[in-house]
Length: 432
Image (cartoon, rainbow, N blue to C red; front, side, top):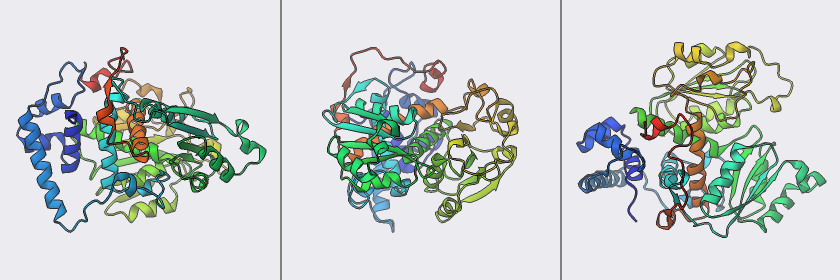
């Protein structure tokens, strides 16, 4: 089965590190033609790419690969599954397992998953496999997203949520729980309120384990889908991530999503990070040091929200993790710390991307990302959550060694899925 043209073109642009404008100029076509080739097939303006263009792009990419092979850079060795392994175990515990090369290879696999995630195709490559979703902390999005991703590859899911419904409430150790569950299921996703606990689960079993969030530690799959969203949005806008200005806003001390995201973003070149937080909730020093060691990044810290978001390419907001606060007194976290439409209109650019890992507190007096931005096309939070499915499908496919089988196993769905999910999504899928 041939690689879908959208997957083929997005992968080529990533490998060549070119914007849509630069890529269309490189291959000698109009930008409008390239945009029509990149649309999903159900779109009104979708066009089939000429075969001569596919051959020409293939030749360009292969020539670039040859240049890289004979340069000082070491070529890739082994499968992605083996290259991100921890102590020969196929598990995902931290974004530290990734290089820029391996991240972009995972995103190529996520692109292949898109027709399944959009309900156009189905695959059964994980038929017979069972996922154990062990969430010892409240979750909606992450738990359901992982379960849906596993099911869309043909697997089934067993869920448990909270300590109350777990034998750990009776004093069972992490080791015992993990070892027992490893005998029941074929992969586990684990969320636990204590930092480092997921690594303990992973050490007690040889089946794939994915960190679904460990206290204030990390949330690697969220960071991966966030980065995938940024790259997708930038591609639509004709921008490159290298050299971008990223403003990260909110609880940076306990927000595990931002800990993982800034480390992953640091794999790119020449970024400006503006870290905006209330006093007492600044980014941990070890995270800042890890980013600083990656290369020529600029890192600024401020408690001034307006100053921090001015001119940013991406504003990534996250709520204050009140459930993790200990004795801190949050100073400077009032209504003036809320990102709302008036503030975005004044300090952001027309191309600024506004993101949030969710959940956000949508109550009237909450100091979170305001609901008055819901109609603003710059708000990418729902496109962000939609991207959780193909990314988590890609994670499972890689960890379980079936990524090369997915495309050949696809068949058309038998039901009638919606052309787009949300009422405001049509414009982003070329259906306006």
